[in-house]
Image (tube, rainbow, N blue to C red; front, side):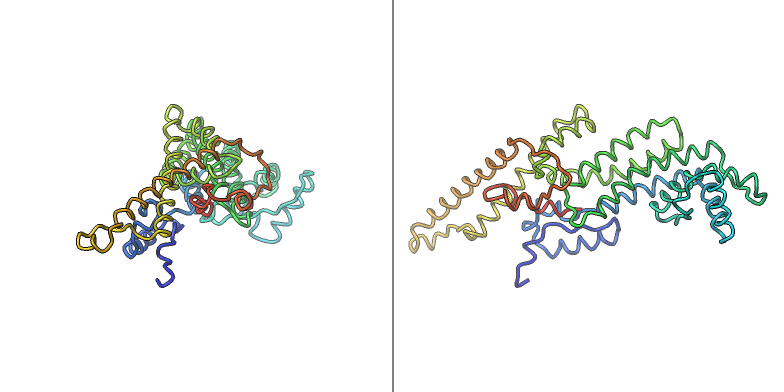
Length: 354
């Protein structure tokens, strides 16, 4: 407490666990909410990667029976070294490149299920040929089951690509999450109208979990996106038109207002840190300090002048967006271009949200 760490906290990012919720409430009880962003309403943030895992797990729970025969087939042909060898020999006889060995998934890890399906699907003809040669092999998937597995694998491919992007980035920043999360929401919306009933149910289950998370985090991700000079408000407008249709304008306006509110809160905090607490009028001290009211006047004037930060935010938003480049380093850009009174000091903490 001697270092005033309690006044320097922004957020805590945790996974989706009820015990974490209880812990956060205990921490907030020991803090002054006025020192936190928006009085603590942004203090507890959900882990994006963890929520993605929960979304996929919920979806796979619906379709697990539809891919069971593929799992059984993989289990059969990986059960012994002799069967593995026979499977590889058959693939070579059919002139099918044997680049990857079959791998059985761990049901609690959706990415392993994706990998199992992706590899097994590439050897569909091998499984069919082995059915003709191996009487004990009785779990060959039907044509419809193979097609269903391809549909599921195609859906998981999006999640897998995004998860790999997040994990492969050495220093992930919050601005990279928003467009990917929006793409997931749009994709789920398409899956819900799939002609396959199981795919529909999977998408509905995913959407329920997604909306619960989206309602908490989308405004924070929106702020981080605004601070990306390649995107600013334009990317919000682009995606929100697709996601919200007629309500897109009000949603964009809400994120814009949040940016200004955060800048205003930051500037007010800085004025207090630099100028101390506002003096109070005490009738008994007026004779001793006739200029005490002047001190109050100056403090109010300083706060009124804080609007110049808002003007700087306006200037930033009005500037053209930068071209999109894969190797863009947003932290370095703000380091070089974020000289005061740019809005970065006030909003830069949002780059760290994950």
